Length: 494
Length: 117
Image (cartoon, rainbow over all chains, first blue to last red; front, side):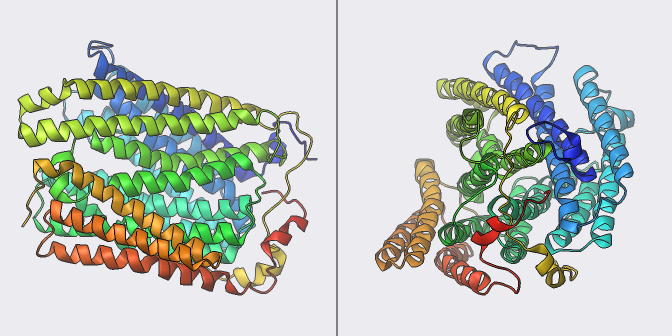
């Protein structure tokens, strides 16, 4: 029997229970990301802080790795969350999925402990295998790399088998194909080459193509399901748009990879390829404004889960500003010559990752919290609604504030270090100690604390929202699935 | 060949780049809103926003020396930003036009009994 308003795992299906585990670890890692970001930020202001104990490079590494991994946990959890509903079949290989979850979580814990307590190796092959592979953002040692691929393959098997035994929808088809690319592309960051240009060439396949292709597509599929559930948008519409999005993403996103090849020793033609396709990347984002308004105007925005909908809206704005505006401002090689490697990049990165990915994961955390409490009512007038609203506000203001602060710091660096001082070592320090840079870094730290406050409120709200509520949610998902079953059972041609 | 931006053009480069995206969005927004509610004046304001976008693209092109091959980028941006909202509008109309069999008005969905998500 469904217990409303109480956290009860019997309210969840097998896949959803596994998803909640992924979400829990994701939320913890989100906290780790913020904590180590705060420590690294403080070291800009007080360089002696934790010097020799937990150096800046270690804090920064854990900050970024925690972000990558919590987003992945969020995506994997989201897919487990929607899979049974979408395939109309229990997860095939649920036990295998459980084992893979614990193996991955244990591996992540060991890797973080090694990062924090061992930190360095002698730089030989043992270091690559057991301590740190040395590739920025994907520093995980080789054994963990192999583990990640195995876990993703197990996950892939579960997804594919479940959809094959149940029904293969368009969303299921896109997810299945995308996961293959997700696992495959990771291999590009796993082999060693002594040539730094060649090494960077392949490394960007993981960094860029994961983020701007496979993650975007995965988020598109997750978002499509989320829109059906929170707003009751028709399956036919979301799937059509999902295919369009996939086409647009691969149209400009893949060759947009070229903007990372400007300065790593690759041939000059990458200036033209990278500049051209990167500059065109925002056009689909801008065009989607039309679609958002069209849907908002044609349908009443009635949602069964207000916090989740609010985070989905934050996703649309954050993605547009972070990826679109902040990305385009420094994407052309003529200006990227000066901005590349300065605080411009983190400015763009903070807003784009938050807008495009963190928001959608948080939306799913709220969907999970709702179902975990027995599909509890989470619309207008819920008790303690101030918590989710303030969490949303503080996290958004915090990230926007950090973005603006880093933008000022990056502008100053491009100007002084790059343009005036000609990228010299002296110019680097001159820019790093300039009052504008330091002031910007103080502001970044202050907004970092605002973000941390938002995070704490978010955790509190996720644990408390819906507690004691006795009403159940109004189901807005409008599909009369039985009637449509025949039409949609056809295998996806995605 | 690549000719880097001059020092005195830094601000105008960043500013005009941001304006391209923001006025692109404003054009798309006014265009969609105007057509959705049958208000042609808003559509014309949308085209005015597009005119600002054109000025921004040309300013950006001047500041970043987009000549030779790069002229194609300027053309692609001008055409892309102009045409994309129209294309998406037509796609919206196409995808929302005829509900599939068995698919009713989304607003009637509230009648569907709650189902475990």
